[in-house]
Length: 159
Image (cartoon, rainbow, N blue to C red):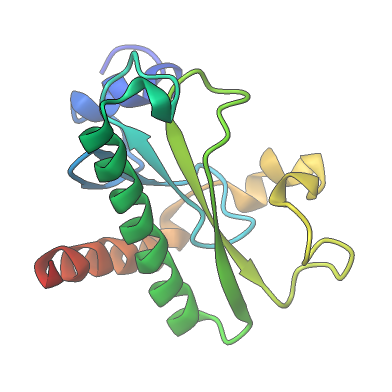
């Protein structure tokens, strides 16, 4: 592996070097988030590094990406519902304001979130949540990783 895989997440996934990859999907890669202050946070990465926005894809590939986003969202929802009785819902977002490649965020939301944030966008959570070692992806998240991957497999076989 050369360099930091975070500098080229899609290329690293294509080379099999991105350790956050859960599954290869039709249009890209389901990955678990680097930070887990909302346990189960996942991302769908498009599998074409030069694609910056959904509209860069031909219609069939757009629909494939959106279908994969739906499948990842459902997998995260099923696992989070099973693991945490305070699970509320999943939010799906395609933003692209920071990273210059097409990706979709899958954010589980919980009743235990601070009252002033539970109904607001995830991006309003305190900035230290994004860098605090306590929330860094690690072996303590293996149950989430395995669960989401297994749900993706089940959803694929369901067709």
